[in-house]
Length: 347
Image 1 (cartoon, rainbow, N blue to C red):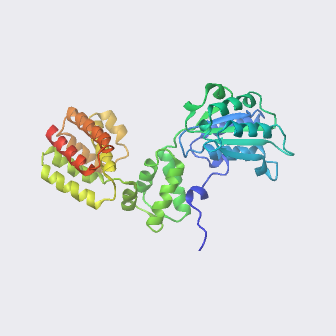
Image 2: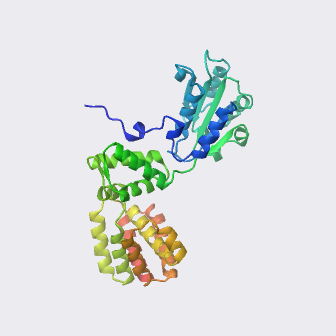
Image 3: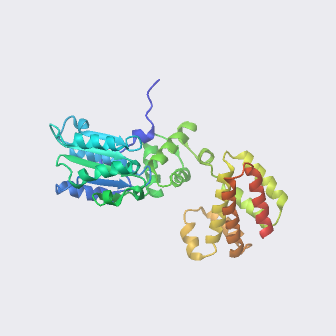
């Protein structure tokens, strides 16, 4: 069987230019390198999947680019399992000795997992790092790192990757991999990756495998757990008309037809009601619904005339309470049906 490389690995950036969405950080680091003033202790922080560890690896190679076997100068550690004071003392002892060529570089991932005593032991070498050593610290929780450590670092915050940037990147991969796609599916994948390029690639890889090298709406919606807005429109119509029987019949049909859980359904219903609130104001209508198709926009516009802003706000509050109740109740279907009934009585 031919060895398969998943998209997150295959399309992992290898150069500064390959990294998506962190232009200012890349430019700043390039300037430091150009002026030969790169700080010896750098902290990268931000959510998962935005390029922190990848950039640390690329930077490490760049620092040692003249060295043939540069990988022997780079030590990558996970602080979640390498967090004791003894571990840090070992690093300090190793860091004292200069390598034959180039620089020693320590990449410490999830550095916030270090123990208090480990941080205390680490502080001294961060204050006065050897000239031949660079530390690149990485974390998703900067707030858990002591201020004494932070004050010794040049800090870079990695932002979420925008939906547009992820969608454009997935489009390039689709073309390169000869994968058929539609724009709406790529948008859904990008949106539901919540700013993580890695999560987007895993989802893209999974959906393309499920559909035999194609990315299309039905499979994408089922895999992500998104319900077609037209069903939500029909359900809200029955709720507005206070038709509990048709509401429950449609709800049963939707839950049987689609492959997603109750939590996803109530989340999608909440988003639908939220969009109806936005459509009440011309400014928010233009801003929040600009990516909706004309047909869907017209459905929203047609429906919102029959409900007040006060009703929609209360309905959104009911859905919010339902989301909380779902976590403490095993009969989630019943909770959802009670919610639909409350929305009908509210109108």
